[in-house]
Image (cartoon, rainbow, N blue to C red; front, side, top):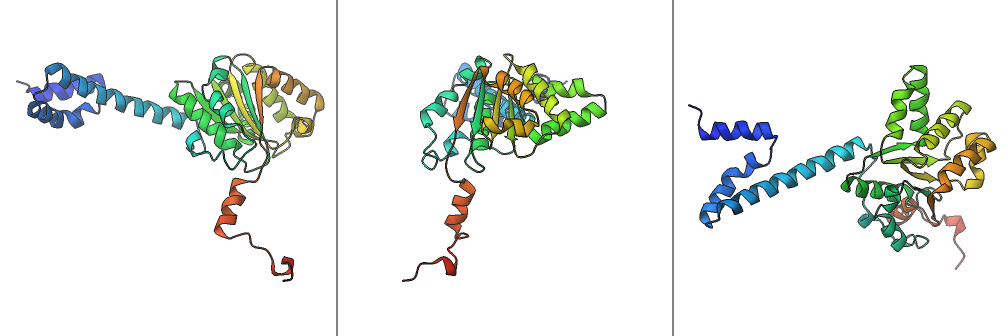
Length: 260
C-alpha cells in the first residue's frame, strides 16, 4: 500500500508544486506547535507556493526578454541627471503607454542612462505580465538579414512584432544598409498602433536620414514612430565618465595645470 508521503509527493508532482514539498514538514511542526487551524496551515503552504511560482514566472519572463542586465528605477541616479523629470519617468512606469500601444524614445549622448531607463521600464512591464523583448538596432537588422537569406524571415519577424513591448537600443551608432533600413521600417510598420516600442538613440531626429541612408524612409519611420509617442531628451555627463573620475582615472595633465 502506498504511504501518505508517497501520495503527497505524487500529488505535488502532478500539480507542479515545488515549494510546498520543501517546507511541508517545517510548517507542519510549526502548525502543531502554535496550534494553527487546518485552514491557516493550508493557507501558509499555498501562499508560499504562489510566491515561488511568481518568482519563477518573473525569472523566466526576464530571461526571455533578452535584457542586457537587471537595473531598476530605484537604482537610477536622478540627482545626477537633472535634465530628467523623475515624476515624468515614474508616470511612465505606470505603463499606460503600453496599454495604449504608444511609443517611448530616449534621446541623448552615450552613457547618460538611456538603456538603464529602458531596462527598468521593461522590468516593470514584466511584473505587470506584459511580454517584452530587448535588442540592439545592430542585432535586430543582422538577425533579419540572416533570416532573409535563410528564408525564415516571417518567423523571425514575429520575434519583434509579437511582444507587447519591444525595446530597440542604440539607434544611430552604425549607419544601416539599404536592406537593413527597410527591415527596420517593416518592424515599425507592423507594430504601428498594435504594440509599444521603447527606442534609444544618440542622434537627434534631424540626423535619422543619415542613419537610414534615405531621408524619405527616415521620414516614414519617424511618422509612424512619433504619431503616438513620448520623447525624453537627456542632457548631461556620462555615468561611466563620472565613475572613472571618482576612481581617479581622469586627472589633469601636468602641462595643463595652472601655474601657482
